[in-house]
Length: 475
Image (cartoon, rainbow, N blue to C red; front, side, top):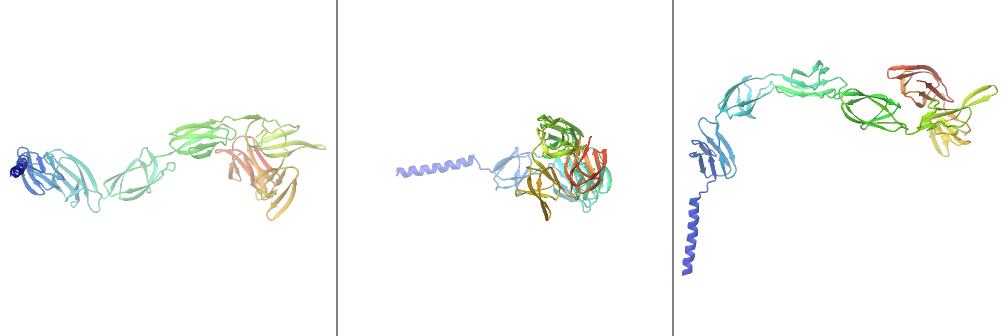
């Protein structure tokens, strides 16, 4: 009995404690702190009026909290959890928007406000006003309003776009479609697609422009321009590596302004490396240092050696077309004859024992089962039997002295000069000296040698088969 009374009294005490706790701590979901007199709504249902700067109430979350007070901008907020919301009501600003054409649609901060001129109360601060109408370009303006400020904005739409062509430098002789202009420029155009053409020394000299139907549109012109890098130095015909691209010196290279790693190299010489910042036209000079210089030590009397067409006492060790000549005397007549030719690095001490065989274009020879095709020079042992192939015809020869195997349709020509020159044959550019084993039909040709635009030498030369024709210009 005593246990039952104890259990009853215990349960009664727990229930009473809970009841008193609830009375002392009411479970309001929302508390709004704001101006006295502000009317509070939740999900469009009237909740009450703020007194003592605070109002607490039960609410079904989520919902829209709204505060209204005469003379102030209404406040709205989505509430998604129990919270205390602090609301500072602000005085409104007023914006009078006058538009033309009169049926224009007015947007404020992305929302449609009216069709035609209107006056609205609005929250102070910055706002984006956009106006549009069929057949006209959109216009967008930003406006900042202080509390209780009233401002009028007049917006007149155009049927053209004010196009600003922004360039980082003055550019003349530019064309906008077919009209000649000077950049930078401001134009009035219809919305649509246009083509801007710059002088050809600009990187992107043809630029497409899509002009939208807006009041103002700015296009940034790609003003990057090629700069000229002229490379000069010794030896000529050096290979110039700029980034991953290769060129030959001397020469002029067009590059976009910027920083470049440059390497100049030539067989027999040490590489030259440098870095340049190309901001304007520039000239780069180089002088390569020989890896090894050698004296010509070929033994033999009445013997002359020519390297790339000229006799030289001191050489840079590198491959050159080498011709060895000896003076022979037949009765009373002395003449110089070729006893060897081919490519060497200048370190010859004796006349090579091999027999040189020159092949022109279209000629083949078979030696020990290996076929060689012209134009080329091969070296074979003395007394070597070679089979000469000329189309469907063939013949066997024994190599006992230097041979030139060619035809009237394909004669061999070597062209040399002291410095690197551009070579033109009958007005056609064929390359830079030295030129080895060029092929020309038998006949007379006009050879012109130029340095840049300057003509240094001109000669009519008769080219024939049966020998390697050599043209030398001592310039």
